[in-house]
Image (cartoon, rainbow over all chains, first blue to last red; front, side, top):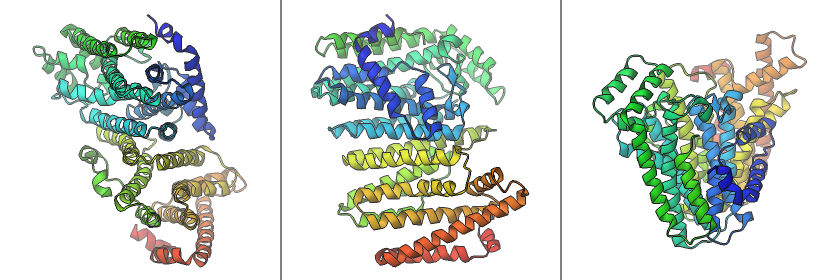
Length: 323
Length: 259
C-alpha cells in the first residue's frame, strides 16, 4: 500500500498542517524565509505529524491543539536535517540542493536554530506541562545520540548494542515522542499514551534499520543521493556490523579503508558488495521485521478503530519502503 | 556549576571549552537577584539563560571554509552538535521546572537573534547606520527579553546599551589586533559601495575605524547618561564601566600588544 493511500483519511488535516508549517517558518528576513521554505518544499514523508494526529484520535481530537504538536515535531526533524547537512558536508537532500550548498554553512546554522526555536515555542502553548518535559528529554537524548554517532565513526570495534543505542536516540525517540505527545495533547489515558509511545519507539527502530538497509540497496533515483553515503561518512550500521562478524570479512573491510586516508566511492562500493554477499541485508531486514512485530503487539493493546488500522498500515509501509 | 554542565568529555577532545561571556553572566546574575525566585531555581534559570547564549555563540564559530583534514572535519561536526546540545540543555532544565513562560521567552529571543544575524550577514546595506542598529539588536535581544519577562525596565535599558557597547569595544579590539573584524569589513564594504568608492583599501579601512570609533564615543555618552539616571545600576556596574572606559583610553599599539 502506498503512503498516499494510507494518509487518505487524514488528507484534510494534513493539508492544514502543511499550510501551518509554511506559516510557522514565515520569517521576516527573506533569506531566512527562503531557506526555511526550501527544505519544506522539498517534501518528505511527514511521518511525525501523521503519528501525532493518529495518536490524537485515541483521545479528544482537536486539530487546533494537535497542530501545535504536529508542526513542532516536523520542524524539530527539519532543523536537525539542516544541521546534519553541515555535519555531513552534504550537497543534496531529497533530490534538491541542501541549504548549506545553496547558501552557506552560516545560513544553515541560523536557519536550523530559528526553526528549532519556533518548534519549541509552539509546544509551550500546550496546557499539559509534561509535554515540554517529554519533548525536551527526547531532544537532549537526540543530540547526545548525534554526538555518539560522530564518536563511533570508523570505529570498527563497536558492537550491535552500540548501534541500537545510537539509533534509539537518533531516530526512535522522536517518533516515540510524536506518538506520545499526540496522545498527551488529546488527553488520552496514561495507558494509551504508553502503548502509543512504545509503538512509536519500535516503529522508529524499524524505520532507521530500513533506512540503513536502503543505504546499501537503494539506487540514486530512489535515495536522491548515491548508495553507501553512511559508510562514506564512517557511519557503521547494522548491515556492515553483521558482515564484520562473518568469517574474515571484518579484516577485509578494514583493509579496504586502511589503504588510503580518504574514503572514496570506489571503496564504498567494494564494501557494499561484501555486505551484500554476507547476508547482512537479510539479517537487518529480519531485525527490522522483529521490531515491527513488537509495534503491532502494542497496537493490539489499543482500542480497535480506524486510527489503529492506519498506524498498522504505516508501520507495514515503513518495513517495506524503497526510499 | 556552569562549567561542569558544559563539560562533555568527548566534545572537549575536539573543540575548545565553550567561552562563557562573564559580562553576561554578571548582568543576568544581577537581574535574577532582583527576582523572588528561590535559590535553586534562580541558579537553574541563570544556567539556562547562559546556555542559550553559549549555544548561539558556539554556532557562530562554524566557518564558511572547506575543511582540509580529518581534525578540522571533526571539529566542525562537533561544534554544530555542541551548540545543539547546549540548546537542548536549556530547554531540558527549564522544562523540569515547568517554566513554560520562560521557555517561550527564550525561544522568541533565539528567533529574533537569528533574524537579526541573518540581516547583519545577508543584507547589503546602503549606509552604515542600519549595520550598527543590527549589531545592537543581536547583542541586546536576549537581555531585553529576559528583562521584560521579569519586569526589570531599568536593567533592560541599561543592559541593552551595555552589551552593545561591549560588542563595539570587542570589534575595535579585534580590528586592532587582527587589522580587521567582521564589523569593520562590513562597514568598509558599505562605504565602498556608496560614495567613498574612490578611496584606496587602506583609506577604506582607516575610514571604517573612524566610523567605529565615532559609534563607540556615542555609545559611551549613552551609558554615561543612563548612569546618571539609574544610580543603583551605576553602583552595580561601576567597576566594569571603569574597566571599559580604560580600554577606550588605551593607545592602539598597547591594546594590540595585550591581545
